[in-house]
Image 1 (cartoon, rainbow, N blue to C red):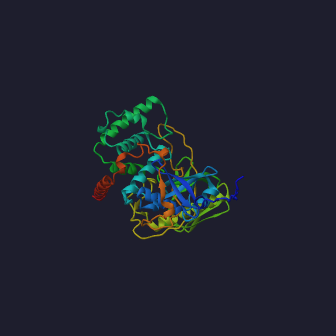
Image 2 (tube, rainbow, N blue to C red; image 1 turned 90 degrees about the vertical axis):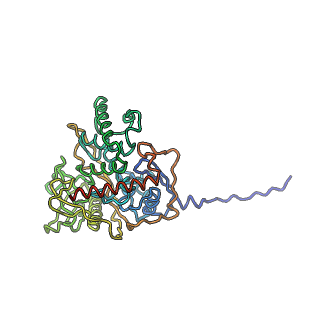
Image 3 (cartoon, rainbow, N blue to C red; image 1 turned 60 degrees about the vertical axis):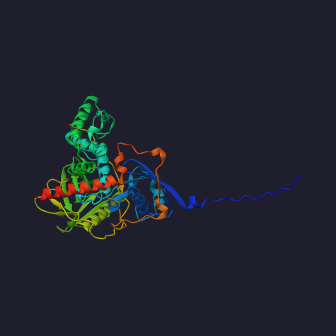
Length: 429
């Protein structure tokens, strides 16, 4: 009988699996990428890895959010460990990339790829019904989107493909005869843009969206001191309040606002220009704390960058009764710190009278921190492991093939810069 040696089994540890984790990130083009991070990696490192994938330098406008266990959209605190946030608050290890801070004029965005991501963001908000527009505006936007995503109509034998393309907001009526009529109008609109470069169509699309009520705003349900229901919110201009029907009550610009805080379930906003303090009431203390932090984060960001400054005889598209103009931004090497992680609370809308209802009450991406400078930062080696899973192939209606040519990007950048310059020159004429 042969001599047999029995070796004792020892538990084997996978060092990589203990110290690393993989999270998925859904981009604005609806593609999903994967990022391998260490358990100590911050949200900032993950954002930088995504920025590398997108060749994006102007990361200060963007952030990452996830769906919380309470089904709210919660922004990642960029300076804190990502895994701890996902384990504590997240429903699953899936992140979403999006715009956090909006600007009143797209011409302020320096990089072509930044404008492209910005275009994808506002288009998603239109199609998801978060920003409302009239049927006429929707058709005009759809025509620009088709030109941006597919190019000239002459490349196709017919425009029947438009019937398979998402053209209109999801909360518009889906009556076959009406949709057919609208689609035909989009086809005509598409023809009128023949010869227009994609970057120019994207720029015009964003400029159209900038005029819509609710653009760049984030709102929450609250009550005033008389228990009247209203919405309070923030935008790149300042703090505002609106009736539930969307009618504006007041707006205070960032330059006129001092300290923002909360006392139990009440939110306090100090108005330095009037030596007064406004008070709004929420459902509970946690919501008041959350909103106060959101307002504080916005206040810090927009005051530091002087995005909106008052000027007579010019109007802000989001608040037509008020006048503003855009100032120079991001010309200093500024660093931003996070105030908080913030939730978004979407509000359902109903379609009425041929238009979509007022959009100012929807929470759009905004706040949170940027613990980094405006200059591009290299991601850590651990956070730069990105790959596109084969099961998540890009949809052609989101990423047309011409996006992958760096040479064409350079040409398109030059063209769009010339377009911006001519646009600015005509506005000063």
